[in-house]
Amino acid sequence: MNLTTLIALAGLGLSGLLCLVRLARGPTLANRIIALDTILIVIITGIAVAAARSGESSFLDVMVVAALLGFTGTVTVARTIESKKAK
Amino acid sequence: MREILASILLLSGVAFVLLAGIGLQRFPDVFARMHAATKAATLGLLLVLAGTALQLSSPGDVAKLVLVAGLMFVTAPVGAHMVGRAAYRAGNELSPETSVDELADKLAAEAKGDRTVEPGTD
Amino acid sequence: MRLFAGRAAWLLAVWLFLWEEVSFGNVLTGLAVATAVLLLFPPRRAERRGRFRPVAALKFLVYFHYKLVQASGIVAWEIVTPRNRINEGVVAVRIRHFSDALTTLLANAISLTPGTLTIEVDRDATTLYVHVLHLKGVEDVRREVQKLELMAVRAFGNEQAVRQALEDSAELVREDARRAQEDHP
Image 1 (cartoon, rainbow over the protein chains, first blue to last red):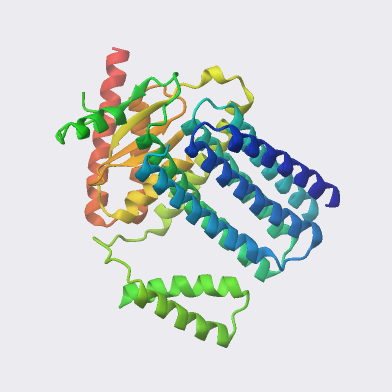
Image 2 (cartoon, rainbow over the protein chains, first blue to last red):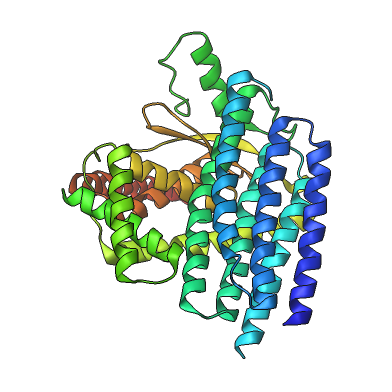
């Protein structure tokens, strides 16, 4: 399990890095918010893997909060894009 | 045995999330990237949550993981929809490989004040 | 009152999930919080109450999950293979508007199934605009969405909705048969 979670965390780190690239490159704001949303999913996944790795489950609450806040943030930015035509 | 199953779930979940990240790079325009982010990443997350639930089997933890799974299930598509809608209206171009675009007809007609155009009935 | 109780029950369940244990104190505070939330943010009255049919709902869930896995498989395949196989398009699909909840469920289900993503809903909720990743035929997309709609309505819609949806599907079958006859006379 330790080895598995190590590989998993490495994979997640790589995915996060790719999302960061899109965050920097993505020509429009819409691209960037999608990259952020994916980074959020990477974070939530990372928390779950960390919980599986250490057996410590006290920080699963962070997952719930992250999911909720991430969704709220995404919707807010989407409405900004639409209203200000900020692309 | 349970650990092996949990490991498989975790690794396949992370593989999907990694594919989502790669997809963000490879797809030609913002809408295709949304496909990758919503579908692949969400399924990856669900797999990882299942693996973690298998690993820590106390009912309280599993309850929280189920909660997050349900939450993501409902919010991810809605989030993608809102971003897609906003991006389209704000003028993000579809990639040059797009063949059909019926929403454009409708929006153009709306702009001209003509609400009687019925898309998709030509 | 029954509607209120149902929604309060959902909120209570989420509350209990968050606190991880079902104790007397938790249930009490949960009910208090649920009541407060429902009073402060009263939900809109549900229009045309649907019904819940367990068997059809189960079929819908199974089909939907199968499609979800297939979708991710297809997206994974697309990410790995060269990009010139993508042929995007935005398709308009007429749907029947029964209730906001059903339309929402359908739009979400579309977003999670292979190659399709809802990006716009017509104001009167009669048309969904679906972005497709591999556009092979506009009619195929419409048929897929209508199939999904039929399954959802059979699971959750009320009587009138189901009857209308079945009428449409009968027409669909006849259309398929006619088209098949045209192709192979």
